[in-house]
Amino acid sequence: MLQESLQAAESILRSRYGYDHFRGQQAEIVASALAGQDSLVLMPTGGGKSLCYQIPSLLRAGTGIVVSPLIALMQDQVDALQRLGARAAFLNSSQFPGERQSVIDALRSGELDLLYVAPERLLMEETLALLDDCAIALFAIDEAHCVSQWGHDFRRDYLGLHILGERFPGIPRMALTATADQRTREEIVTRLALHEPRRFVSGFDRPNIHYAVAPKTDATRQLQRFLATHPGQAGIVYCLSRARVESIAKQLDAAGIQALPYHAGLPPETRRRHQARFLREDGIVMVATIAFGMGIDKPDVRFVAHLDLPKSMEAYYQETGRAGRDGQAADAWLIYGMQDVVRLRQMVDASDADEAHKRIERARLDTLLGWCEMTTCRRRALLAYFDDDPGRDCGNCDNCLSQPATWDATEPARMLLSCIYRTGQRFGVGHVLDVLLGRTTEKTAQNHHETLSTWGIGRDIAEPRWRSIVRQLVVRGYVTADADRFGALRLTASSRGLLRGEDRLVLREDPVSTGRVKKPKTTRPTGAPELSPEDTALWHALRALRKRIADDEGVPPFVVFQDATLLDMVRQRPTRPTAMLDVHGVGQKRLERYGERFLDVIREHQLGTE
Image 1 (cartoon, rainbow, N blue to C red):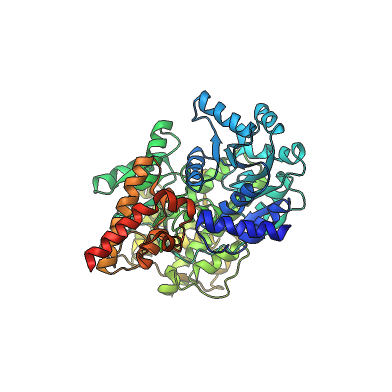
Image 2: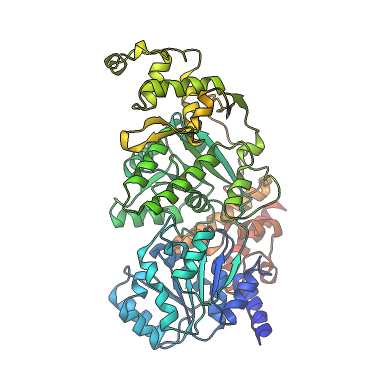
């Protein structure tokens, strides 16, 4: 019986989705759901998690209930499913009462394959009572890491989802996420009360993403140099504060880059409008706090840039995972400085969490800092954090592509530590460097620091290098920046060996920026591999048709066809409907809906080149 169900699943995969075979563990996950088992699914962004619950929902009796935290994500998923011929709908606050009632009536009468609902609405007694009277195929809990109070995207509403197992015994539940370390995985299973779940942990590697980290010097100028390598491409720029989001968006806009701000302080209508533009238009740069991004399905995001440190490796992986969902080359670019470290530690210390939680958060921040300063393969270290070992260096991060230089910083570090000690461990980076460089200021004069033995002993070293030394000493635990005293530098027990001359210190050499803007290496289409002029013309024609259709239907272009599908059309040049079914991502329903219009463009292009 199960074998027959799997054959039916493969048939749906081909006929509706247009894919020849399941990827990775998808077939096993689908089989587990069809067998009525609970499961925990960890799969990287873009790995095909949605198929794992959509196909069982189409095959099992009843409606698949999908718990999704974001209204925009529900809309996109439902739009895409309806174009596959699935009977899908959502229930949320964006609907008029009449629309909601229509969905409820369809659910009651068994006319829905999938229903998307937010956790807070699902947990309403009226919703649970409605589901009591309906046939349920399964419960899929997307973004399941939101249940973790130790995680980076905690949502209190997720804590109540354990009731699903009690109220609907025998209905399989599937918890899905792209990001969870071992602690978070265990918390998901416990808090959702999953019953003997099968655990599917796919590799976390996203080989198409290039990781790069640099010290922050002039953030705006550095960002503009980076964006110059991605002309006309969609991307996300993350900032820590709302004010910084607004400022960076205005500066980019003034520089001729289509940039939109997004943060929780904006009116809901503005946020919805900006998100819709990002999803539906080409080349939009979204400048945002972490309020933006979870569940964003846009496949052709070509870069994620961080102007400030994220809070942890999990947060970093989750945020950078929004780039390159289509499998094409993408960049994860981060710059950071000492002020980021101080600000984040202040946020941890000022939180209402208990001391145990704060210790864990500090440790997670320290792990991320260490990753930023490392000189070996970044991808291997990032994957190792999630207990995933690729077995070799990636060849696609900044450290692999250009081995960082190192230098013996033992004596300069001793000078710095001595200066921190002699100034009383009461001052921040700026003042300590003023003393080392022998710069007279009002504060140095007030404290008579020109009389110290460390006054001016660091004049032979440029200030940027001193700042690099401070940053790396903090990361390595020789110095701490006291968040309660406005970032005052204090020595730790680890610094004794250095001060006494017992230890040697080798530090990373910060790269020197030329200040020049890099020109893009190619003029290839956004997200596409290099194409001949003839193929590029067809690519643009197919994209233009897709955009017209998407605008007419009021959906993002990728809901019609993803870039990977258009590229396969360019490669295969189908001119008949049967040949179009061989294109990756074209199933029977999409062929019936859009096939002839795309075939006409390909035929016309063929005639024009003969």
